[in-house]
Length: 138
Image 1 (cartoon, rainbow, N blue to C red):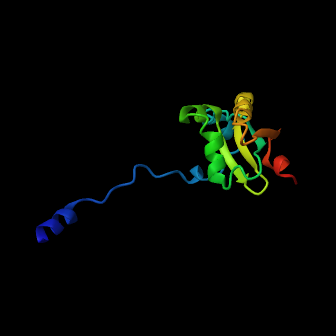
Image 2: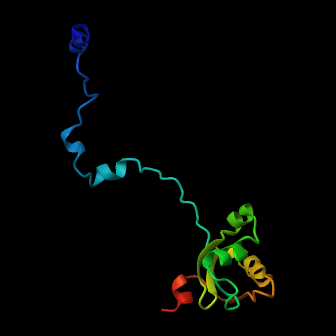
């Protein structure tokens, strides 16, 4: 035990690499600021534009949001959902209305798929918007 302590005691403490000059922490202004190279940041990826689709089902066709989720989203495979940017936002079983989000470029494809839901459920798109606020009503 004492040997271990003596090993650690004999080691020198770590030395700092270089001390910063006093003016390094001050804000640079004037000529010095223009001389320092600008830090290059990576380009931001462009997020695709999204659209929200308000759809309606026959009243009583779905008793909960899980059934509506299965009815609408199971028409697409998982890779298709990712490509479409498809996302189930909400469903109200009382009035049979729900909201789905998708990418702008795939809007028509999603509308057609909702329209193709069996006639017994009576699915149709009511309104399309760029914001949830406009769909829900202020």
